[in-house]
Length: 447
Image (cartoon, rainbow, N blue to C red; front, top):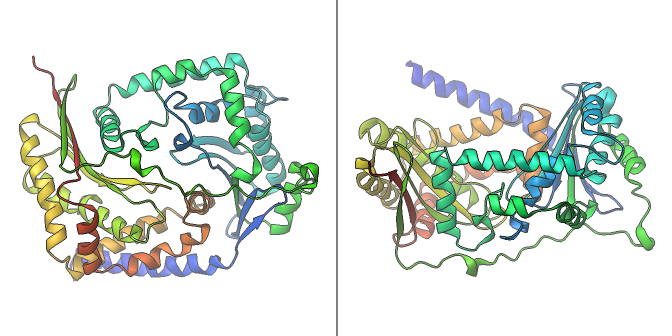
């Protein structure tokens, strides 16, 4: 028996074991709506004494406009720089003194703040989390420090050929659709945002009905709810009226996306010594029924060193030194993007080869062997990314926030298993059409 067969047997047995492990915890996942409107998702995990608390705020670059782009990211950075009663140094010392971690992140569809703590210090960790979220000081000095840091990061992106191409690609693909903006914003928008803007945006979005808190660990559900009631006064409702969770905004302004009757290609000259190519399509949101098929399509084409793009364009044709693809999960219209770092002379040939791979996907059935290997790849990476309480908490909150629902964390693998070769052909023809692709190319400036 060769090494390749042994490898896939090992992967298969590992996946079966881990799927069983994941399924045994499914019944322990609970969703509770608190009186103040906050959504609590609780999952018991007795395997260790680490408690992960991940708070999702349903606000990201989607909720911004072209004048305040980057404001969510700005707020997220300033939140960790002090509260009404603690300086940034005192806050750091408080969490470190109990062996905890606190951090924040921003994405297109949400803002996120998480705390990782031991079971012994759960209550204190929860107090710190909501002190940071609910009582930011927005000190002017800290605001200016973070502004300078964000501007430096925006500037540094100019030295990345991938980031430069990606920003141009999003502008071309999305037009005025909200996802055309970068999470960090632009130099102009970051310079224009003031303290009052931060306070007003925080007041609008950072409130319990717009939040999802996920708690994963070896702790009783009753204790979590009891401590939340103490910290947030969830039994007290303003004017005797308890708010409901924020309703999902299911309206997507699709008319803002450019409607193309022919492929779009634009070439830019840059300061880079290499060239870069991105080619992609508009795809549906994560809640779409076609989502699992599209995840398989993405993996087939650009998922690792055994993918079709890597094997055919990089290994066989030697057209690129960097190659891959991605299909990010979004609340609203997403995209499928193929990218290549390559020599300028190979751009036209590489672009044609990409389109050939798309056409092959639409015309020729994937073999059972290749499909099985791709499914194993997707399942393996998914399961491995669930090993920690932190990542389990993230997935539950993420699925809930983007509209799939927290229970999808236990359904995704089953959906992948149902994908057939016929599904791949049908879905490829549905979305990856001959006339709707967008390509952005960057080539070196003339010497």
